[in-house]
Length: 288
Image (cartoon, rainbow, N blue to C red):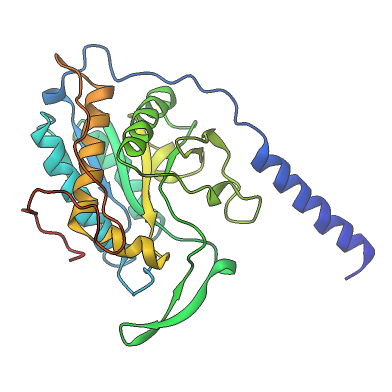
């Protein structure tokens, strides 16, 4: 590589690093719509990816789409129980950009007052290693764990989106979850600036499902499924139940109605199955 090319590459790396570490432009958070009533709020839980394009594969080969669907269904149960009876799980089929662009449009057609896209996370290829699991060679990385939240300032309601993300970040921390910070790394494919580092909230303006949303919209990465220990925790029904209760409580914080939300009584499971909730699991999930 010539000196000129080396200098250009170095300059590019420095610019990426500066962009990642620079604080995002201030965005003032807002609560839910004035006079918001839980029973009237249409919450759309967007199941990330599709059966045809199922997203990332976990460390043991599970499809991200199946995990997204199971978590979205668990959140819907808890949200309805908390009074958000108009909550809907939205599934999408197909592939490519058209299925992405259809999501916020469909949400608007059914009158969504909040759009929450449910995902599970992966890492850049540079961090992946291989191992043998479930009869095949799989890819994994145990370097990163935790959740992330994303907001687009190009969406129609960024302040309210950020307001809900703040409340969800608080509720996730209250049940023992911690954010991963790898999306802020100054490397290609990441470099997403923080709106709130402690709560793991990033600005990601070009996410199609967020920037095209006419309503408050947040994308939620519930955990890093290529991390082997994190996957063992994520697939447990107790994990989904705790996260679902945290989301329902965040909804009540953002749209309180006539009574304030209560603390979430839930203990997160560890990868080996410890610290479980006492209540029996009653729902079903595609990831089981």
